[in-house]
Structures are given as structure tokens and as C-alpha cells.
Image (cartoon, rainbow, N blue to C red; front, side, top):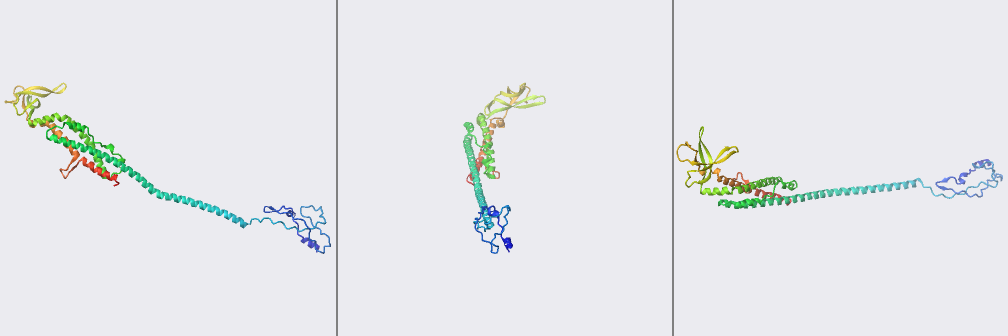
Length: 383
């Protein structure tokens, strides 16, 4: 029976008593030795033989007074965190991280949304601003172009006024000697340099055609004006002579008859000193006969008899027959008058146009300029 009690006696864990087994991170305090309960009766009062605990040499006897003591209750170690608690802590950390990620995404999405909203609002606003800037540039260029066209039109109207005054004088057979100087002081200030990309950017096709016609017309008008000016300076003496000869015609040319190997031949020669057609004709006079020389053709003065009667050319020197002035006007000052008149008419036609033929009216350059200014003004007003 005693043997059975001994076998049922719990073994003492020395490591536990020495505090070498840790629970968690806290050391368990050693038990306080105390009186052990006496063994059950029937043991004969003798202390049972207790096997030495592991790690103690069996050669050292256990003192007889050392009774097996029941280990005292160890101090409660702090509760070890359970798996549930640890899981909760981890879950809270993950939730925080997730919330932070969600918050970051919300911030990013808000920023993207704001940017998209800015683009959505800014694109039309920015596009409108850009269009507004371009519109302002188009209007400014159109205003500058209209100023140039207006200046050119004003000069053309000034030129037309001068030509009108000169026409009145010419109608009275008074030569407008001052007109040449006045034309030299007038220049139509418009040419191809006024027509560049920016200045025509806002014009419609019809206005562009008007502008091209106006530009070409101004350039041609300046050339015609300069030619007319030069003609005025040259034509004064011939025109005044022609006007005088209209009242008192003179013999400017004669026909010279002379013998040739094949028969009689005639030459038209100018009279050196024309004489009055309505007065007595001289029996002989000097003419300027062209002859070939070493230096080329040269007018040689010769005084010959005027033909009166007999065979032509006769047996003697060549004879002269006066030519009716009406038939030689093309070779006299009358031709200069005609050239001057034509240049005058062409210049006024260029300025004012001609609507005498409804089937083929000619639009004057002044009217083209007025129409062009109307078209450009629509651009400046946003039309």
C-alpha cells in the first residue's frame, strides 16, 4: 500500500522550482518552503524514501526533516496576449492602413476630379480666350488695313479733283501747266506690301477679291499717273502750237518729186519754216531732206522751188508741192494733242469708271476702294 502511495506521489519539477521555465516573458517566482502534510497513516511514522529529483546526485541523502512540501501557489503572471487579442490588434492595424489607402485614393480622385473639372471649364474658357485674342488681332489688322485703303482713296479723290480742274482748262484751250507739278506731289499710298497674311486673315472671299483688284489698280494707277506727268511736261509746246494752227493752219510738210532710174519718185519732207496756209505761198523754201551719210541717216537742209506747172519732176532740180495740213496732223502737234487727250481720259476712267454701257460697265478704282472699306468695316465690327 505504501508502495502504491509512493508511486502516486507527484514528482517535483526542479526547473519549475528554480524558475528556469518562463511563461511568456515573465519568470515564475520560486515556491516558499513550508511544512508538508504528513504522510498518510499506516506508513509507520517513517519517512518514505523519496527518489532524488533529476539533476541531483543520488549520493546525497535527503535530510530526514525535509518533508515533501506542496509547492506554494505561484504568483499570477500577467496574462499572455491571446491569439484573439493579437488578431484584433492586427486587424485594427490593417483597417487603419486600408483607411489611409482609401483616404489617399479619395484625395487623388478628388485632385483628378478637380483637374478634370478645371480642364472641362478651362478648355472652353481658354479656347474662348485664345479665340478672343485672335479676334482682337483680326480686328486690329482690319482697322489698320482700312486706314490704308482710306488714305489711298483720299489721294485718288484728290487726283480726280485735279484732273477735273485740268479738264476745264483744256476745254478752254488753256494748257494746265501746273498739273505736272501737282501730279509729282501725289502718290497713291497702296501696293502689295500692304497685303500680308495678318492683314487679310479676317476677310471673306469677296473682300479678298476686292482687295486684290484694289491693290493691282493702285499700282497701275501710279504708273499711269507718272506717264501722264511726263507727257504733260513734254506736250506743252506742241499742244499750244496745235491749238494755234487750228485757227491758222500752216504748211508743215511738202512732197518732193525727183527722177530715179525707174521713173519719178516722191518723198514726204518737213518744211523747215512752216508758212501760213491761208496766205501767199512762197515760190521756194527750205526743207529737211533725209540722206544717208557715214554717220547714218541725217536731215540735210535744201532749198527747192515750189512746183507751179509742167511735167513732174521736170528736167531740172527736184520740185516741192505743199501738203494739206489736214492730212498731216498725225505728223504734227495734233498727234501730241490726241495722245495727251487719250492719257487724260484713261486716267479718269481708271479713277471714276464708266457706266455708259450697261452691258459692260467699268467700275472705277475709287468705288472699288469704297466697297472694300465697307467689307473691312464689317470685320472690325465682328461681322
